[in-house]
Length: 94
Image 1 (cartoon, helix red, strand yellow):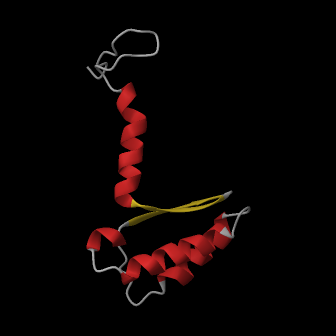
Image 2 (cartoon, helix red, strand yellow):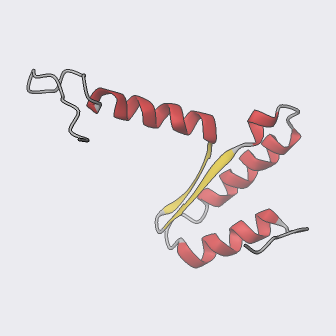
């Protein structure tokens, strides 16, 4: 795997965004503000982000918040949970 050192991360992310994002490129301005704020924090957990670049904008989300939100979306659909039809979901991974 290639190692990157002394890289301007914001410049690199901007180049990726300009290549892949057709609409709402101004979302990246919000991302820059978010990442600069995180860089000032003394808490290492505040520095872990997921950056998503899409054709219609970008997202810069705290890693911890992202996993919590995804879990809240998935939890009702996991085995053992009551489904919309009233039955209990079964584990079908066998």
